[in-house]
Length: 387
Ligand code: NI
Image 1 (cartoon, rainbow, N blue to C red):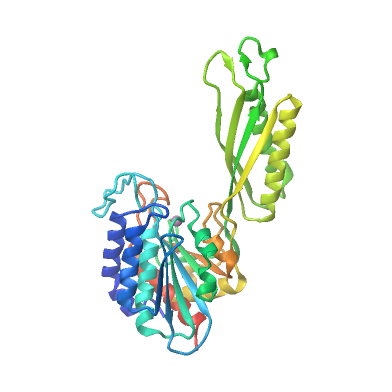
Image 2: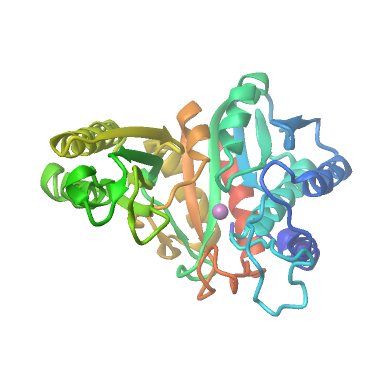
């Protein structure tokens, strides 16, 4: 089953829809117009059930197959854009200053709509497919909020699949791997409290800047001296703030940053070690260090059976030679990870060709990838829910 004829014919409409969404980007949970656009089309297609307002603006629709009872598999797209000023110069560039679809979620939304249209018409599968449109993928926790809302239980979903476009992979190709494919993301803040004083009388103060400098260097040894060199852990301090004046030693210094890993157990390790390094260094100079550590996205982990299904579905559309089954995991995070924690399944990368990078002001989704992604979803449903 290469790109389906009916899907190829739908390409022009899909591109029109994609460009409409691209011109009207919305952020986080505020994807009201986008969700309304989705709901209107799902109703036109004649889906069997539709629920909206999940986690404020999420939408889930159900299409039952005509081949009898069976499991319910979930397919997920994200709908939100980013607070970036667009610089593509395209005719369909964002109409809203300071907002743009720089991660291709406009393309993801339209591909899932395209699949819904085809599946509602043909229904060539057993069981049912749940189409999941989520808000707030870009850091505001939409995936988690939807899972906590309980839609998986309400719709009886047993497996769940996601797809993200990827610059650098050819249009018409896919990449996937078994196991971890995207990293976990945690954030930390360290507050170092010393004793403020006069810059010319340092012996009467406890300088939190010097102590923080040593903590920063200490953080660098957590990975280099503390973890297996073949395991991935990235600790990056991205902010350091202290002081207001040339002649004052400040009382406090704040350090902040992120921890990323492909191995869930290393999150506990990183938290414990960051705290130990910060507190022991501060203590040895008579200062105090407090750590705040927040866990965001878990590791995005593909299940073995989900990976096999996704691989087969992709190969079915583009040929096995265009599917890299051992793509390198990416150390960015993805909040579809919450759905994959709740149910087994797989996340796949869809080639976006030589475009600008994700989250870059010059990025744009390649409309030639639309029929490929739509066909992948259809192929996945028809193979996973074959008679
Ligand atoms: Ni994205």
